[in-house]
Length: 391
Image (cartoon, rainbow, N blue to C red; front, side, top):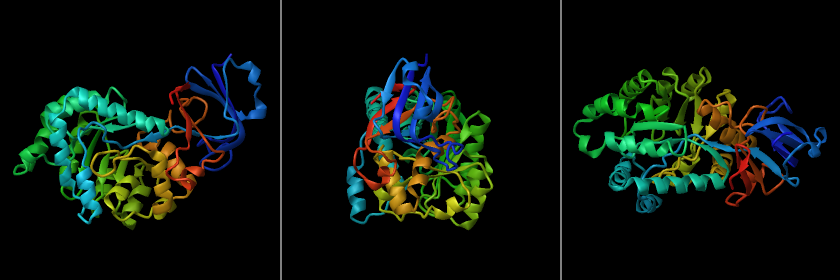
């Protein structure tokens, strides 16, 4: 007897090409079984007898998709930057330096305040279909505050990222090399047991390519896996540095050229687009078509943070990617699920195949196309994680 059968699925997105020859691996009139929180069978509804199962859930002909994998987030912080956002909407350009305002607020906040805010954002994302979330530090920028940021992040996910190299904090503005040395030395020593990943903001107003290499190499030596913010504010070497050091993903990549694309295509590094950042900073959206045409693996993430993308909603990111970055609806959905999993080097999430975690969402309509077709509408009817309904 299996634990659960989900049946009467009008359109099941598995992200397993073996089912229909496309990346989404669609099965119409489908069902799948769950045992001990894992998918144990997938196929046509006609191929299974519901009476053989203890618990049966009907999707009533609606679409079912894998849970979203949100591979880039900054959820441990205090305060907001609504005034900064308003100024940007009136023409002020986005600059990385605004991060230091959030650093000030975060340092002043109690653990309880930081925990409550992170919890609210995780739940907010869960309600909109996100079942796997990555959380970065980076608003502490002192040893003690980076440690407590990661301790709090670990309460919500195993995908924790040390981002001590977010910007140079104000107290080190006149001695940036001293801050880099601290990040690579005592700060890294203190946070390494709490993080899976190490990240660097390699861009104007943040860290240079050489500083980025130094910090990432120090993290790798401590057993952390590399990823980085690259080419958000202007063209640069971030993509090259990420591929050079075997980064799992290079994120933002709002500015890239044919050489950058060729570099990504020759690697296993995922290109992660963050359309919420362009939306919230009124910046030009990149055209993702040449990246797809080169065969690069692509992810979409929300980049939830108080300064440049204060949203946890991946359906909105899908709609923006389709409308503004020239993704197809199919590419956008894959990127927000299987692509996000690849960006975290996970094989157990982002798809619905035998052995994968039973993380899935039942939509309110009969087609995944509605995620882009009906932007701003709550299309998530039920969210399940590990075979249990959580929303």
